[in-house]
Image (cartoon, rainbow, N blue to C red; front, side, top):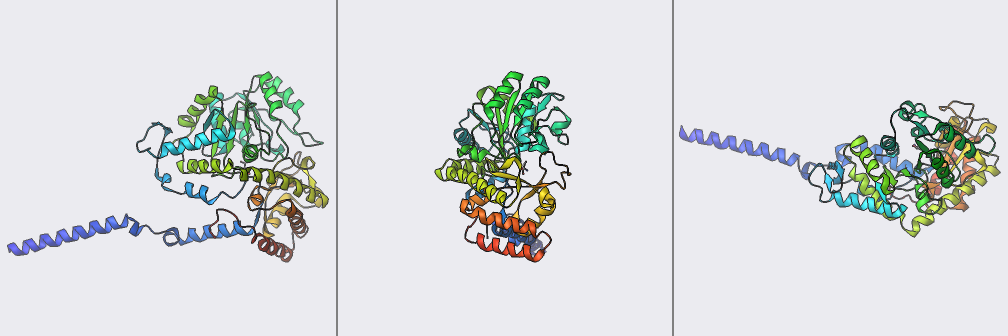
Length: 445
Ligand code: DSN
């Protein structure tokens, strides 16, 4: 009897030990399969996206290829960590590695742009801009920015954005004849409406921003000048576009466009605004920063300080100019007549095709861009007259001016053959074969 009880105890102990082991094993690397094993559906879709990015001329001007190093930094154990607060002043323990990462990112960004203060925590460009509103404005205050249909950004006060609902927005525009920003109009409006914030910067303006002229207007009307350099940050640090540093009170940006970093945002300013900006980002607007993205930004800032990056930035602009000339030679109508930066806006009105139809045909032909309104567009934003394209990603792959004639030729063939699937497929096959000689960084194919 005693023996039977003992063996029952042993059996139960063994069962418990086995259950413990299975539970522990399930939580260790033995049972930590990679993505392909854990979720073949998602793995296959990511693989497909890698191939798509490999095989297409990616010409959306706000996109690029981040390096393998940047992507590795983003997808790491940093994803597991909360670090609300700022380096050395956190609300969570375990920041032995996080603090130096964020400090490196912050200090590299400061050195790269030549600014006294950088906040590298904004999740992206829109939160960065919202933090600036929170730092300087009260609901109902007046703000000014380039109107969205003229190349501005939603968060510069456009009506459908929270910034156009909670603040009084006075948009400025580009001139009808040459599509350049009308600085006389900006000054007149600014003196009349006395905005709290004056934004310069945009998403579809192919010309150089005159930061000094904006600074003079902001000073005279008492506005805080915010330069949103999301599109041109890489050109600025590469010396291919004038810098707003020394002119703008605050500079906001994303980190993944011409700068070629991770998806993220940042705010740069002088010491006088550092505290207000930091308080507005955290605890004002955000919770825990995404330290993986911040590590990616540190890597990107290191890459952007090299001679190779400077050469890339100048090549982006040279390629855009060459592409504009090649398109104009084929009868395409370029908004503002050309470009000074990385992007082109093409008005397709005279080609008798809408921007949307053209963009979809071009995509099937292996040329990825986006449909876009043009200034004073008589058509609706969801089916506008133009397409927007740019050269950052193809320049990262190594394409130069000499290739732009070929790219313009493919563009033209695809627009002309928008309804001819066989012709679009033929262009797509040529594009894919051509790109085989120009590997893209960071892809897993
Ligand atoms: N989505 C960006 C662009 O494409 O320009 C702006 O936020």
